[in-house]
Image (tube, rainbow, N blue to C red):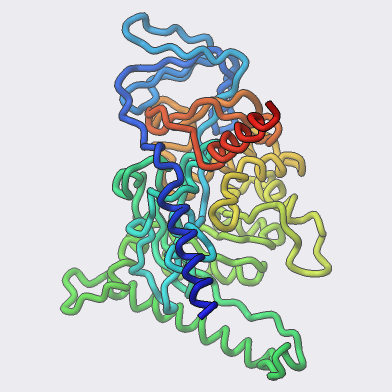
Length: 438
């Protein structure tokens, strides 16, 4: 009885949070007037920096980006940003943002399905635009994300969204941008008995099980490819239907693999089906750089604030990994696990600069490189003429938590609300204790 009351109180608390927090934050209206921002240092996102730059944008698109540019006189809203910095909107890759809200409340978790082969699952239809988390990300410059399904061997399709929308249709920049696969790996063998008194499988048995999983994955892809070549199948297979865009080259294939052996195996597997994959995780990618370059592989590496996988690894390798790979000429994207921590994405990029990567190249790992990996670089990822006007103004260096101060942000030209629940709570209790002192 007491347990039931406790569970009920947790549920009511969660409901209260969802019902009463941030009711005053609405998506911004469509851009109505042409805007010119002058005087700022413009970090384009492709490695270029424009001092004293001028950005002119209208109808949600960038019209021009110039140094000391002239601003048209007719009906243009002017924003003077002298001494400030402008950055492209940061992109959170391979995240379950919008697919989960409260980790302790199962009803708010919608990022994983039962089964091993879920190619028919689409994260976009589960994306929750009413989540309270994206607003906290926008305040640090993260304006786009790639909500990604998890679990099983083939998890399903991710999509690319912007983080200020009424519904998932409004949010979508590109639906079904990538199919996500987790490469089967051999679990680490500890030997003897587990902590529960049951003997674990032998290393040989675990290896055999892993090979069987790889064989199943290969069989699934072979059958799906054969199905994709049938113009009008007599029986519709939804899992195979979902794979058609992958084989046609209209959807990327992201494969999660960490060890050098698994990375090589995953790339060779994809090549058999005429696909150039994107490798995510990539802990030991630095050991097979030449192989990755020869195969034109893009890497989505894990956050640098982590420990190495093996006891004898360089303890600083997670910090250096992105720099080593990017300096070798590979297209590198930086990611963070989970969802609420995505607000720290720019600071992870800042950490990478401290471990050997040029600051503008580090910026590219969370902007243009990410857009390229997701296939949306023609419309976003950098501040260039013709692209979406998705960028923000910061008082200082946005990759440094001490100086990142987002003062104004635009998504597709819309001047978005930068309020969030954290700011509201800060104001509430600051007002409370200030009043008490008086």
